[in-house]
Length: 497
Ligand code: COA
Image 1 (cartoon, rainbow, N blue to C red):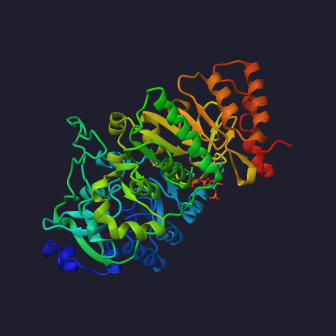
Image 2: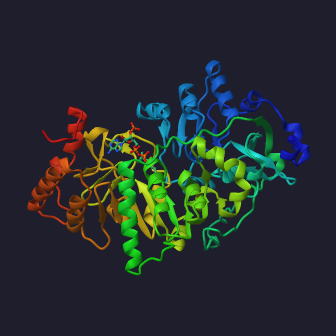
Image 3: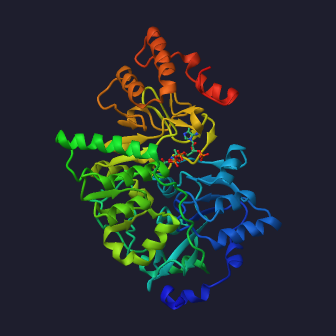
């Protein structure tokens, strides 16, 4: 069995325990680890490292593709192993350590990390730890349920530790397409012309002598934490599909739309799920995370192909999909995240990008990351890669949060991730604002009329009317612009008295 998974036989001599492998990691090192949105992370070695740190404290910089499952970020943060964390996380425990200033978190566009590594703009990776389903006859690494940054970590690191996960189905082999852009200044265009384009290898090519240790693990990926669709997310999906249907009617789109990208989380998943009950057909995805909704659309016959960088599913969907992976294979492809999120490819394919905002303002600036302007939620992830380069950039959110104590539409966002120049369409359960071709004053009118909860509409209109009296291209009452956030901090609600 193990011989089928480790097919380059000399590497069988490298089998060690997780504790022995973790011993290679020293204080001050930069570790590049597999893992993207709770999928395909190395599991045994980081846990052994956290255990060791209890008696032998050490600090590392941890880079991954994106967030980790199996409570790894929490466990590593609680063991005080993390000095720096790059480029994304979504764990409440690590979030606490970041917001307390204990862990330095570099919140980065997901397409950028390995470009900066490759050009030595950030500290190099000392050791890569990659979860694999197999090692090929030539020593190539076959990743599991995510590719993320694993390929470049393994290629750029001096030393590589492999976790062969025997609980991950062998049928994952063949799902991956590993393409690494060539060096500048002679870089060639990335030859992806449709979401299905296969342009690389089905494994990560590295010299096998770089592999210093192999650990066998059986721990499964954590299932996703998304909630099922509710009345508000159904309403958001309804507004969006009505809008897209009108685009078809106007002749600007066909029923197959443009390839879709959908962000992480409950809302984006629910919105995509809503496409099942629409007349759209032959849909394709060129996205980052393939969530439950992708498989529901494939099962319903609505979607023909999905390209992503990871597969992150609910427990129920895992049970359904993993045993039938071979059947799904001709509908799916997993790429490195710098390719799934590459500006060049996003522009070429002309993606309709749907991401979630925490809040947006009357001019269409979006905050996806900072609660109250100061406290990190998860990170920008790929939303910036997609929004700035999209054919159509859509942001969705519920109009209120925390039982109405928070309005998600505010006079001025308390942190900017996506500027007004990167947002075309905003949708809440109240309605949809089409901002294309509109100047700031026109945008404000459309956003206030269509997206705001009834309790906040009049106060927002009043703010805007007073701002307009002061003049300007983008009118504001500056001393009041963040007063809703100040109210929230001081009184626990943005709601006007
Ligand atoms: N201010 C403060 N908190 C807010 C808020 C606001 N304006 N709007 C929502 N929230 C809170 C919710 O109450 C909820 O809190 P809880 O976890 O305590 O229940 C939490 O934020 C998540 O909101 P939810 O409505 O469940 O949405 P979600 O699961 O779809 O997540 C984001 C929304 C914005 C946090 C998430 O999409 C994200 O991290 N995005 C940034 C990264 C990204 O876009 N990646 C995609 C690229 S592929």
